[in-house]
Each structure stands twice: as C-alpha cells, then as structure tokens.
Amino acid sequence: MIVSMGPHHPSMHGVLRLIVTLDGEDVLDCEPVLGYLHRGMEKIAENRTIVQYLPYVTRWDYLATMFTEAITVNAPEKLTNIQVPKRASYIRIIMLELSRIASHLLWLGPFMADIGAQTPFFYIFREREMIYDLFESATGMRMMHNYFRIGGVAVDLPYGWIDKCLDFCDYFLPKINEYERLITNNPIFLKRVEGIGIITREEAINWGLSGPMLRASGVQWDLRKVDHYECYDELDWKIQWQKKEGDSLARYLVRIGEMKESIKIIQQALKAIPGGPFENLEARRLSQGKNSEWNLFEYQFISKNLHQLLNYQNKSIMLE
Image 1 (cartoon, rainbow, N blue to C red):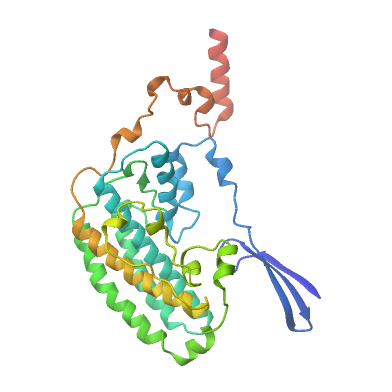
Image 2: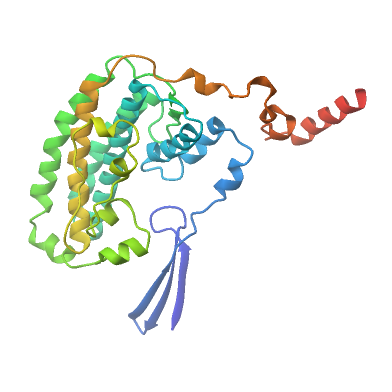
C-alpha cells in the first residue's frame, strides 16, 4: 500500500510530504517530497525597495535571520560598489555569528530529543534566550530583526552592549564543553548516530548541500573563506569539517566545533571593533539622482487602496 502523508506540519509550516510504501505495519520505502516552503518571494520583491523587502527576507529562515538579511544587502553593495564602514562590517560579523550559534542550538536540542535525550533540549533554550536578549537590545526584535541596511546597519550598538556580549561569550564557552561532556561520548548517543544517515562527499556536492551538511561530508568549503565577505579575513578562525563520511555524528561534531569558533570570532570582533559610522549614507542616494527612471510612477510602491491611487492618477491626467 502506498500512503501520502502530508504536506503536514512536523516542526514548522507544512513543509514536508512523505510518500510511504507499506506492507502491513512495516515501512518498505519512504520518499520525502520537499519544496512546500516556497511562497513566491521573488514576485513580492518585484515592486519593493530593498528596505521594504528586508522584513520579508528575515522570515525565510527565522532561526538565522541575520544571514538572509546579509545576502539581501550584500548583492546590491557589490553591484554598485558601495563601501561598508569598518565598524558596520564588524557589527555584522558579530550579529551573524550570534545568529549561527542560535541556529545551531535550536538544531541541537530537537536533534537530541529525537534520539531520546530530553535534557539538552532545555539547556539550549537557556542559552538561546540570552542571545535573543542581545538581539532585542540591539535591534528591537528578538527574531525578525530587520537590522541590516545597504551600506551598513540600521542603528549603532547601544551603550553597554559590547560588555554584555563579552559576558555572554565568557558564560557560553564552558556551556559548550558541558554539552560535550553530556553527549559526545555517551554510548547510547553514539549507538544511535554513528554510521547513521551517511552522505558521501560526492553525494553532498551533487545534491548542492551547504553549511555543516557539506562540511560534515569531508568538503572543506566555507563562504566566509571563499567569498571573503565582511572582515572575516582580519580574524583568526578555522573551518570546522570532518574528514570521514558524513554521518549524523559528523554533523553533530561540525556544529559543536562551529559554535566554539563563532565565540572565538565574536570575542575578537568585540575587542577590535573600531569607531566611526555604522552606515554609509551615500548608499541612500541613487547614483542618477532625482531624474532617475526608478522615481517614475511605474516603479512606485503600491500596496493597499490601489483604486484610490489609480483614481488620483486618472484625475491628474484629466486635469492636465
């Protein structure tokens, strides 16, 4: 018997469908069908400016929202050769690495719960809430931050934030060691993850995997090293990867290592962050000035009360 399960809600918003082949109560085959998360964001972007579109992109991956904001502003910055002030670049690095830690923590807790260990699930929320406190004090939002801007960030760091973030780093690094003492050499944990879910190096490349999934399969690839974006080249850190075949244990080890490296990066950035502006104000001006075609009616932002706007335009034409 073939049964279609979903699209349903295993953890988020109806993102997964399973086509299951059954023989009585035995599962003979299971084909996952992905792609249900796509919501036409490209179409929405067609009549939005970058600033208007940023609140949308923060919802692409609300476990690591700073990364979606980063790619949205990095592209026009490169296209128009907009220089980002050094202080803004350091602030971005700090926010990106905090976001990486928050994302890995929320991976770790449910991952451990899925294999039968509930305790780490509560530990990770304890530390993750501290990161969200830092985000809230800097951006005003705990999750959907809308913080990055073309040429910098929306606002500078508030007074005392750097000291508070350094205190978090000093607190969190021993907690990672605590996770490892609890989990890494646990015989029950090893029995359930070692040699399970293997993704070979060739498969990872062919399937277009990225991040820890790719690095756990023996591919030493990290965009921070490859693209040289922001000021990562000025900091001392190493790519975390595993030489052996990518099983569930390797993916766990990569993420644990990345959290340690992220703390190392944040501490260096906090101590080296320069003064100066947090935004390149020239990025707010279109290079063509007021006469640019992008200021014409055809490119204006249109949302609610569309009929009123069009009626106003028609009246203006009749008067002329």
